[in-house]
Length: 352
Image 1 (cartoon, helix red, strand yellow):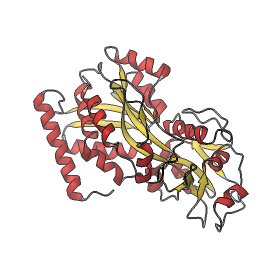
Image 2 (cartoon, rainbow, N blue to C red; image 1 turned 120 degrees about the horizontal axis):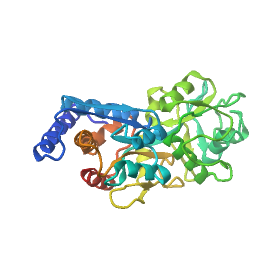
Image 3 (cartoon, rainbow, N blue to C red; image 1 turned 60 degrees about the vertical axis):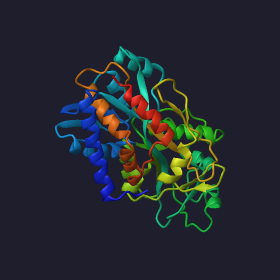
Image 4 (cartoon, rainbow, N blue to C red; image 1 turned 90 degrees about the horizontal axis):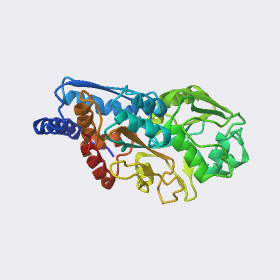
């Protein structure tokens, strides 16, 4: 979906109106201040867009976001170094216990804010279109398929000039929610082929590691016969071709629109204002791209310090507006579905 310049200006104006309303109510001051946040590299481009628009509308406010990976972002938040963390998987387990301890007077909550597609981006000379099944994708990343002209790949791509070349795999070297979602997809959709554990850290042998979505996409761009998993917007930034994925319901081209169909199948499994989601990686819904992620902004429902609270709440109020969400489709992301966005606004409103 494209929005024109007039709508973009209206979005910024709306931010200013929201900010003035918040200030007048005393709930969410935006009269200057500074906060730091870190985490998910998948949402880096979205954060860059949002922070720029917010700071233009709220002079004197400064938001710094470091895209150092979901695992590092959660650690920074739990160590009280940031006001919120970005993570491509919901905080849980020991991390959640530590986050609740940091918040002290209230629970840490997962607020889904950015949707995305994880794509199999590749670099094969002369191959502009590529189809992969869930099974073949799992075999490539578990090093069971090691040549581009393997019969399993050739069968899915009749007529393609697949080279007799070794497949160069790229994975994330840092602790990553993108890795967590990608491995969960492989485990769910191709359990016989993917026998490794899921999680934020890549454990399968045979791949080369690179840091961040931007690092992986740059490595693919510069390496012949390579493939890696990255968030859609980063593949678009590097003009990388992306494989269509057949999860059993027919091959689907990755896009903001097809990923949106996939994300709409997600279910809220958290309670109260903790909006942790269960994604359906096994979906065969028509037109649904199955390898999706949702980036959460993780913060304290109660317990942020007085110097962090106003700006954190005001900024997240902005990112949850229809105007800010509309920006996502322009840059390779997926807005939150309307029903979920209503819950997101309630969760952000609970921050105090």
